Length: 277
Image (cartoon, rainbow, N blue to C red; front, side, top):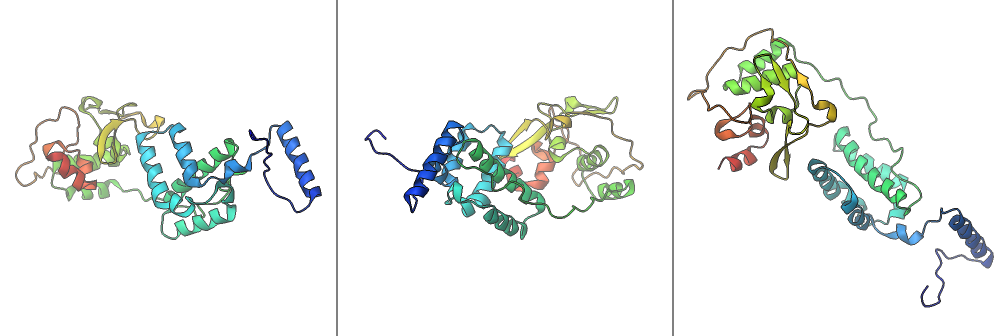
């Protein structure tokens, strides 16, 4: 140290034990494998504060990260030192999450937790990632049922607005995601040759912290051209009360009154109402 004192990474009951530890430290330093124990004594909350500025992620991913940290990870481990987070405590944490969350949600939370601990290992603060190998999904997910053409048309028949009927049919016959439907632009819907294009840069509508914006679809492979199959039945035109004619939108294809994207009016009515004003 600058004042001439010598620091130690641990204490030992005998001189022989201390000498053995000194030799181990010398070997680790020579092999560049020595870990300063002080680096692992910071809390997980402190580590998140250090890690966050250097991590690259999109707005939607950061929104999910902050939610997982705020609601699940930091309430349990925020005050725990990195080198005190054990595999057993992680397993108990996973079990408690699975008691009230779906497997997919638990997997998302643990993916972030494991990332934080893996980065701590890479930063030479701890030797092992306690999350590695901890099972999250312990049962096979049930197979998702697929609606038949008749069922799809029955659903559409119960909808008053023609634009929302089209929304249901388009989703059923293309497999487009919710954000892809909401963000579909007129320029990417070529009715003359039956082609729908999911743009790689602005092919999906995203909502983060109440803000709506157009951005890339969920994955790179999601940017694609679609040629919907012809439905096996025709949904009868049934105008909504007050008429179904709406001004032709300049940008979005599937719109509701006052220009709100149709899917968002159903999913987040509070947000849709605010944006209409």
